Image (cartoon, rainbow, N blue to C red; front, side, top):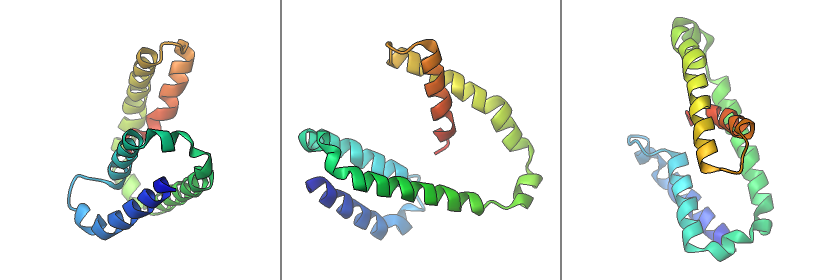
Length: 131
């Protein structure tokens, strides 16, 4: 229950400060990822028993899907046509390099994985790199 209270307080505080944070390099994902790490370090026993948080996890997954969908609907086709070289370079050059780097890092970090499993992990995580 403490974790839910901390999460609610963090969301409330972020909502209060989000307008000021827009002018800095600090993003929402940075705030919530840091808070999650600190929460785990501060309360490891409570975080380990997260079965009570399954409804919250489901709610957050749905919220993430909605946010990603609405961000995708805001893209104007005219903006994409005007700068077609950048997405092309990102997909043709950047994405394979990120997948390769992710594969190497996964193989080094998780030694029990085969190279193919590490490649799958690198491919799965590559599109999240920009986020």
